[in-house]
Amino acid sequence: MDHMSASIAVHPHRLLPADPATRAIAESLLTLVEHLPILSPHGHVDAAVLERDERFPDPATMLVTPDHYVTRLLHAAGVPLGELGLGSEPAPPREVWRRFCAGWPLFDGTASGYWLRSELVQVFGIDDARLTAEHADDLYDELERRLGSPEFRPRALFERFGIEVFATTDDPLDDLSAHRALAADPTFRGRVLPTFRPDAYLKAHSAGWAERVDRLISVAAGGASGYAGYIAALEERRRYFIAHGAVSTDHGAATAQTLKLDPADAAALFDRARAGDADAADAAAFEAHMMYEMARMSVDDGLVMTVHPGVFRNHHRPSFDRFGGDTGHDIPVRIDYTAALRPLLNDFGTREGFHLVLFTIDETTFSRELAPLAGFYPAVYIGAPWWFLDAPDAMLRFRSAVTETAGFSRASGFIDDTRAFASIPARHDAARRVECAFLARLVAEHRITEERAAEIVVDLVDHAPRRVFKL
Image (cartoon, rainbow, N blue to C red; front, side):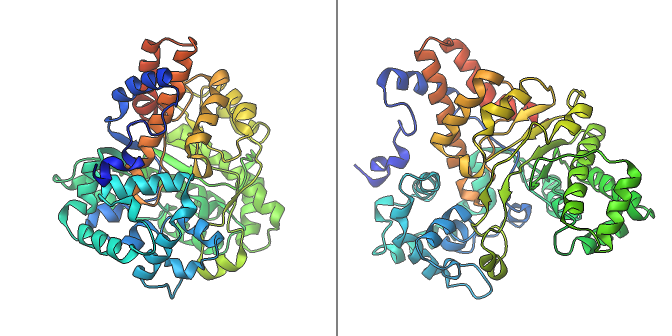
């Protein structure tokens, strides 16, 4: 038996029910969806990676350093982030890879371990039994050779992965030149869509906010100034994104709080913040008001609004000061949706065409708040398990928690939310297998028919993201 067929990364029953009768149902359902195209309406891979189509630099830079799921667990085991390729004076890539291979046992049972094993075996043909410190250099050299071949360039992998739609996350002032070039390139198949991410322009407490807002107004306000110019500039940049294929906006708000202010009060808050005179309460109120304004704009221009609240960003200040954000120390916190979203939903929750996708990493909200909200408001959809929850057991808990109240039709479809390009097929495959496992149990318990389960699984994997994200 060769290493590929022996690896658990290619076992046909991975993530499917252990019970043979239920597993047989799940296997039948899986045949309907395992080869469907990948729809990725939210992620963090730069469009320039595909536009330039340059080889990935090295195994560590591709698979370890940019993936905070990987770096955080190694850091917890005592490996400094600088030795994982982060910071202004990072360790050499080969040393990073050695650290990763030595720490590979740490990932047993984790979602990131599942994805990494799938990537290395299925994408790169690596024998996962050799993921040890002893074989680190040999594996590094094997991966280097593969990365140097044309079939491992970004566009070749994009096609091999079966990606149909691929969304990026972009600053409102990005010129979107990479998206424009890809759309105009007849040799590139697939849709690469920008996503409007205005957080840095809405959070008045963040460093450099006033300077960013000044630039936004100077570029896009059409001569208007002050708060009116700020609103006009945001609306103009949204139109620019739509013209370049955008279908959604993305908001990493600290909370889900929304607030409807009188325009004069909002302008006064804006002026105080721009002058540096706003306190923390002012900044929170301004962000809550701007979340309401983002919903109003989505009602007007049709962009789907996705909200990802509930994260304490950059929890370890020394690491943030040295290595910056997105380096593994963002930590979930409790979140409230029901009261926080009421001002927004009172005005827009039943507006035709408005789609509000709510994500969470606070599992307690699944059945208590998100499912009931999505089970009443036509505008509300439940975002797929995200970040710490896009893991097999957590995805099963999510499906159990929301389905009894909201059914299957109110879910967004899976999102991979990844910066690690090669992990995309593994993440989508895991989600599809989990959906099949859940539906198979309902069939085995005679709660739905197998025929209906077959319709549902295709809807969850393919139709739901097209419907919710207006693809």
